[in-house]
Image (cartoon, rainbow, N blue to C red):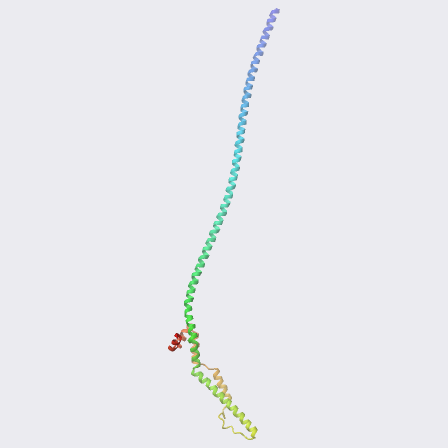
Length: 251
């Protein structure tokens, strides 16, 4: 009985040991599984770290690319602003060029018109110079000579001279007669005077009025001629240049 008990105890211990061995094997397997899981976890962690490092590098690269893109965008914006400014400058230059061209065209037109006007003035000036020379050398002298040699002027001038002489003679004769009467105390007969019975003062006033109101036919003709636009040509017809005058001018 004692031996059976010992055997049974040993069996129980063997079963117990078997159970322990099974648990140990189970623990070993769990340990192996745990180590395998740990290795897998570590491998996964390493891969995660690698991915994280790669991701960080990628992010750094993206950040660098973003910075480069931002810098490029800024350069593009600046370049765009410069292009817009260049366009405005070009447009302004075109406007200024167009304005300069317009002013140049106007200046050329004015210059051309000025040259045309100058040619026209010169063409019109030549006859004026010729007319001025004719007036200087012939016209004025001819007008003066025609007036001075006018028969009406000679008569009108001669008449006041004669009347003035008669007036002076009458006054002188009267003064002399007055002195004779006062000195000799005798009456002086004035009937023998050439101006006896003639109102010399009235005759002299009439002669002066006639001279002051003198109207010469040649002056009337000249006045009418001077009112004409082509008065020099008409004066040339009235006072043509004589052959002897032409010979003197040529000499």
